[in-house]
Length: 140
Image (tube, rainbow, N blue to C red; front, side, top):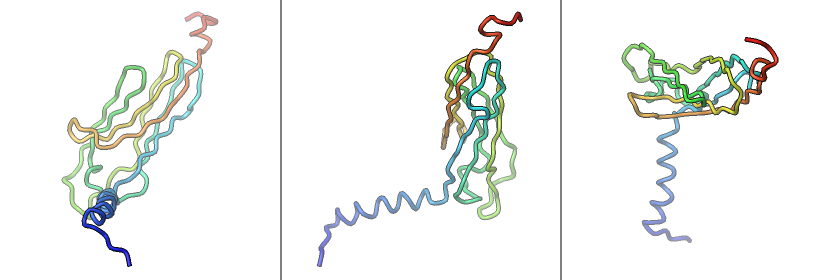
């Protein structure tokens, strides 16, 4: 028979409690379309919230921030009814687009925020290759 010390029991229970707290938290998946393009390129980025509770309070009526990887950001705030546990539904899909005028490797970051605090984020990478205009092959 194994005998556990108090410290061993606490060490076993703490990870379980942490997992229970995040049990209802959805995961974030971010995808760009197209992920590789020639400049100038219009890219549509979609963030999906998968799994978790439909009424996950921290994700209800958030502010959304897109960081485009080129020094610019876009923000969106939602107008929602007050939160009601078990009744309020989180938004699960967020979409934004941007035209990248120049080539480069960009990391687009999607953030869910409450006030100024980031509570969750996800990202995707995209590659914009030099197009004919950027390479000087076509007059502007």
